[in-house]
Length: 127
Image 1 (tube, rainbow, N blue to C red):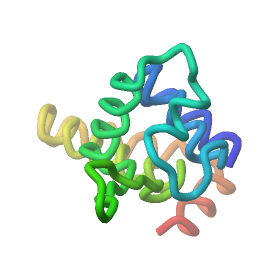
Image 2 (cartoon, rainbow, N blue to C red):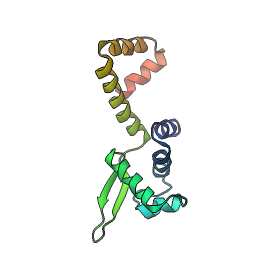
Image 3 (cartoon, rainbow, N blue to C red):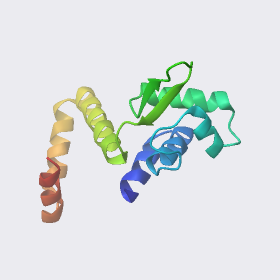
Image 4 (cartoon, rainbow, N blue to C red):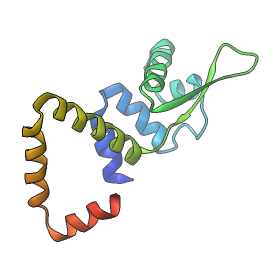
C-alpha cells in the first residue's frame, strides 16, 4: 500500500489527505463516525471533521450510511488507495483527451512506446 498510499494522499488536499491516510491505514477502524476521526485530529473542530467526511463521501472516497435512530452517519472507505488512484487517473485522462483531443492520444502513444519491457508487462497485468 505504501507507494499507492503516498500518491493517493498527494492527490487530495491537505486535510482530506490526512483524513484518508487515517482511514486507509486503519487508524479510525473499518467503520467509524465523526467522533472517531475527531479524536485522531483533536486540533480540528468537530464541524470541520464532519464537513470533510461529507465531502469525501460526495467525492466517492467514503460510503456514508445513516445511523438508525440518530442524525449521524457511519462511514467506511469505498476502496483503497489503489482504487482511488485508478478512478482519479481515468477521470484525469478523460479530461486531458477532452481538452487536447488527438494530440493527447498521440502523447499517450508516445509514452507507451517509451516503456521498458518490465513496465509493459506490468501494464498488461493491470488490464
